Image (tube, rainbow, N blue to C red):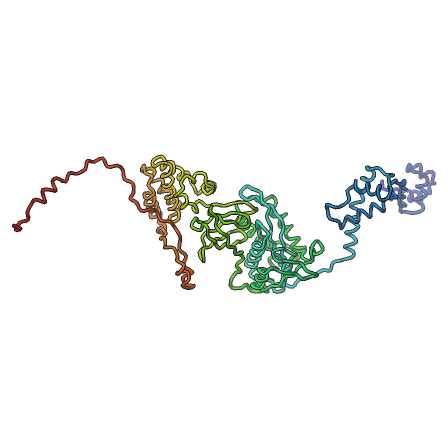
Length: 550
């Protein structure tokens, strides 16, 4: 029974029966003091706070609190430990009347209280002012850390988020890095999906891809490529205050990144590539148009339909977000980009090539010709080799093929099939290790001009015929292409000369492949065991005189 109910019954019995204090105390098994309290007031009196006995730590509590408050602004690794506080009490204040366990009990309770008091004081001092946003004018951008399992391996990635402040429509992309290339590519994708650009500004914290130096107040020194990017799309940047003090200035995107990660990236996504994950995210974003934010009566999609026509139009051309580099090709036919190595065709060894470093790819050019596109590697000291880039070297060094990194990568990706292995084994048995390997390399060169399925069909046909001729493989592969109704084999144009590259813009659009042709030789034929023909009968013809020649 609650004390309020007890008091009500006591007062009712007194009113109806005029029972005495002694009778009421006996009836409800309480002290007569409680009966008198009930008769005096319908509300029970407040319980008295127990008087705590004086602690031996009381004289030092002020000193300890001062140390804890100083830790709020100290570097994390230079804050007071419990032992350090005990040492300071002894050495600086001569206080030795407390045990270590007593100090621990006090600090376990007092530390969180000190932090809570400081947070409460800061919030009361600053305060917040509600804001509203006009449609089409503002957006916010931020990165959030996210883990993804890519091809079975965990990878720490960055979730790019651009959120329109009015409608709450957001675009998300996952990149392996938060570098400038990913930063700009995220903007390009977001502007393309939204169909326009905010007319006023976009809010940022002081991201390194955009800000080179944080100056006094709101002044910033921006990177030159970022200034060019903003100028191309025609928007201004608003930079928040550094640190936690400025996080609330773009609180919408701060919350959006965490919400999207909790809602759609839990459990940890398991994908083959980040491109697959981003395609999945684009489908999720389309479904989220029906979501309501903060109990708004209208959905995100409804508000965005009103906001979209008010965005500034996109420029006619997308900004080239690739960072141009000119690394030199080393003797292993590799270039080094961001401490990772990528293979290029062997003909470029010793030369400088033009590289366009992008958020998820590495493009390698020779003049205006795109030579190869590699997926960008995360981390450092990785490498990616393509077997096709080493075929010219391997013709002169066939023994290096078996343990080459390019062959290992081709096997892992499935490009080097069991049919290739069977052809290689048969060629080495028929021609020896070196010449058999060269025969395989000649077959691999066919992949540059013929579909892979056709080359594999050609190898199968030649193996069934008991031959290992690369020329017969080429013939059978062309038959397979014709039987499948596919396009004719690629015609290999001669390499573009330097003079032709300088003729004009019209010639620069012509892209020609660079392929080493197969050596000219006749197909292998089975040994001829017939006897050589006799020419004696033909000698008699020489002795016959034509008529009328006498």
